[in-house]
Amino acid sequence: MTPVHTPLCLPDPSATDALARRMAPLLQPGDVVLLQGQIGAGKTQFARALIHALGVAEDVPSPTFTLVQTYDAGFDIWHADLYRLSHPDEAVELGLLEAFETALCLVEWPEKLGADWPEKALTLRFSVSGEGREVAFLSDNPAWHERLAHV
Image (tube, rainbow, N blue to C red):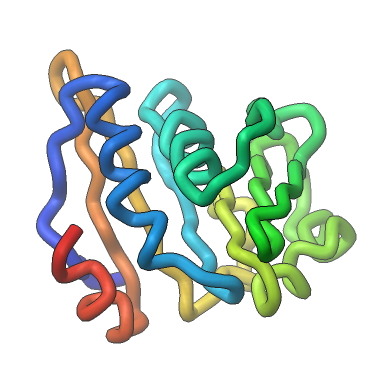
């Protein structure tokens, strides 16, 4: 994967929320955003803020135990947490591969997808950096370069 944007420093949760609000208008059904990073790096914080920025008013819990939460923002949003999957076939059983084509999909722990990693996806790699977080933007899809130019 190649960088599509300069990494951003996110010194606190409000900076993560602000990034989600800036990205929300750039996303649409059929987009897949893969959220990588260790536990506590900001993946769920970002997903929750993004879902709210897209107009979903309801509570947005972590899908750690349910595996997938879906939302209606005038289009389908799928928020998946694959941490507990033991085999990539389980993502297929969840219907995630079909959702990649029709919904906006936010996927935590995408490493669990194995060979089903979507080529068109944008990966946000969150990492702990001092007291805050940093996020790198990666993709092999050149369309993301233009879309993220003003984030």
